Amino acid sequence: MTTKLKHLLPSYSVITHLSISDIQCQELKDTVLRLQDEFKTITESNRGLVELHSELVKQISDSVYEINLTDSLGNLSVNSNKDNSKTDTYRKKIGYSTSTSILNEHTYTEKTKVYSDNSILFDSILSKFKGNPTRIRITKLAAGKSITPHIDYDPSYSVRIIIPIIADEHCVNLFWVKNKVESVILKPGTAYFLNTGYKHSVANLSTTDRYALMISVNGSDDINDLIGN
Image: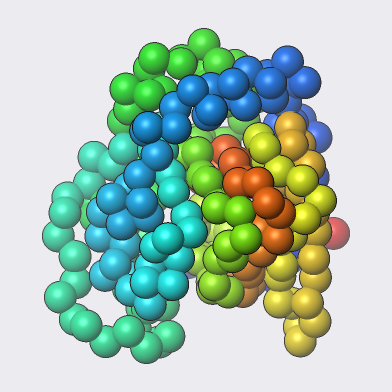
């Protein structure tokens, strides 16, 4: 059985070896501004997500937009059980984590056209990873919007790395850890590990949209020095 890592890791941490240069950050900024027409709603970009997080999708449908840089080679079959309780959602996550479903982030191994058209930039960023990046996307959180608090999965299943591209001090990430709320302002160009096993949220109180590169990584090689510290 895979050892759960949630309680062995901080809620977030800077990952120095994955942070990008000022030049790369500017190239990313120019790229996302050029690709505005490629952004899709959360339901358009996440096939099957409604099955797992129906309430969350309803609450952020007008707040979050994405460009997929990798796509899933998994199948489209999803559980038809409409029970949306926390217990059922957790059970579904565990089941999909080892399946060939599109809800398994390990199946996101096919590079999209957007990636291929900008491969020099994205390859240069991903070449620093020790683990195997799978699901990769550019996210856009609209100005004045927030993401409902939720739990995704334990880092033993997949490690979440985020590199903000356009963001300011008015965009805040929140984590609920042992009855306390931790907050952090993420700086553009800096790579962060996010412990998605904890309940977490993002509040963009800025007047500008927040853009970030979101990467799911198979394996804990990039965060091994954080485990137990």
